[in-house]
Image (tube, rainbow, N blue to C red):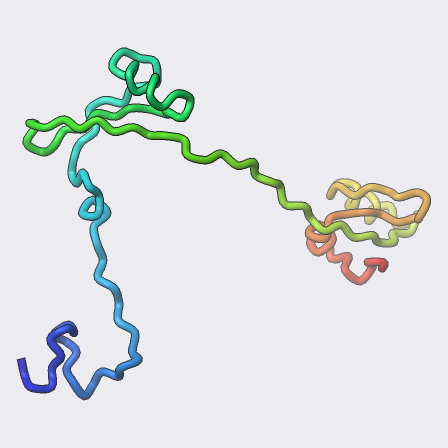
Length: 146
């Protein structure tokens, strides 16, 4: 190591060439190395209520998804793990913005294209209502009212 080299930097970066604000890439880590049970092979997956899961089913109840038994590489230690439901949240569907547009009665092809794209006729306003996404796809943005 020369006198300009920082011992905390990789060997390819030597003193004067490295700016202090230059970002450094974090070392990549094997996911198994971060696990408390690295390289253990799953030998059984059991569903709640099956033989071998009765005590765990009583302990965790409806939150229990499955029980797994894993063996270490030497085959001398078995580890039992459980998969639990921690949270369940309903997913709200995205609502698409709806636009109104004028399509003349004589434009038969355009009316049928709007109808096929899911458009609905608002007879009182004499406008077609369609999702903005479909209006863009049909190139009707210049016809949008309001």
